[in-house]
Image 1 (cartoon, rainbow, N blue to C red):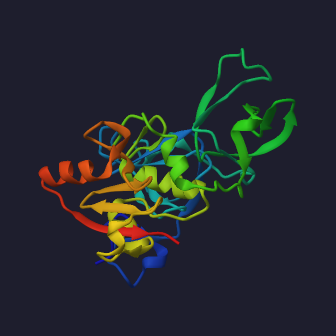
Image 2: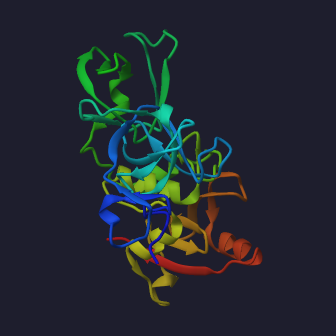
Length: 281
């Protein structure tokens, strides 16, 4: 059975490339759009109160296959393949390709070359922009926004240590489906951190358990390394050192550093055992 989270197919409509593989009333090629808002919700259904599945960040590409005629588009994120409903208002026709990405936890976009001006937007880590020129301490985007240069990097900028990226999110409120420093969930933290380090990563924890690294055997589990991933059903944490993990979790309602043994015992007491420990690289 194809995973519906990654398969753009409904009884009414499906992606053209799935023709002959799934049943649908019609098949469409789809049209690529660009996320124009800083953070756009991808929801389970075409309603503003529907469950948040994940978020798309400014500059991401989305292939749209259908619209409900009431403000929502149904499509697939080009980066991680997630399928869902996104507000039409968050999409724009693709323009110039992005040249830079936000490398700070978040940054402000100003309407001119002064930090005293009221910001026009807040952009999260991983958002992509097209820079046309520099003006002192600012990078000027195609939209006419002025962003602090030190908060941006080229699209090929790679962080040395994805765990250090995750640690920067400590204190961020927990948000189911979130993937920014305004709100993030456990797998979103892993995805954003690995992406910042140049590693592709699926969106949800079960996908990450299946797709990342190699499983440790019982002997290896006794000596965890920085960057190992500990999985439970519906949850993932990142190993910091021999004694601690960092994870976005609903117990703290935040991204927190926690003693590994204590976290495993706490989660076990709540009814969930460790399902795997994976080592990357």
